[in-house]
Length: 175
Image 1 (cartoon, rainbow, N blue to C red):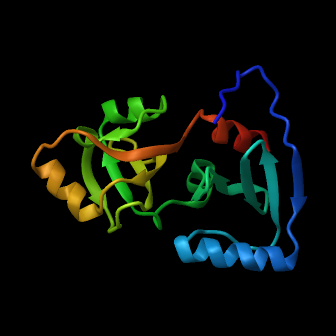
Image 2 (tube, rainbow, N blue to C red):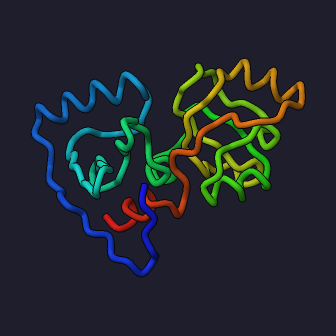
């Protein structure tokens, strides 16, 4: 995803409400992946920027579709709650790294929250502030990550898809 300068104005190429049929189809896809996502489904819009589609629920950017993946936005997790999403608790060093776009490495993970499979979309939570700081795609299941951190393994555990300050964040806060 392209980098944009803070001074650069984000130009949304299209933004419009979805029809009832489009909302129904979108809801089926999202609920299959995220059954407990806190969306109300009353007023759903799509906003597009280049190859990124963001779905707004009552004005809040809740779900993004980018690079063939759909996942919740950090803004939605922060504004609507994040108790429903599985994830990992990470230390301050890992928080600093993922907040600059780095993938999450095993040594930065302190514990696992919930159960998930390999290739799942999860959130990473700062250990001290207990807030989501990254949305990512797992390379391992929750059980495997627990095994690996107990063995003090090294290497990448979660691919960083979205963090505060990235392009998706900048688009979300501009909407």
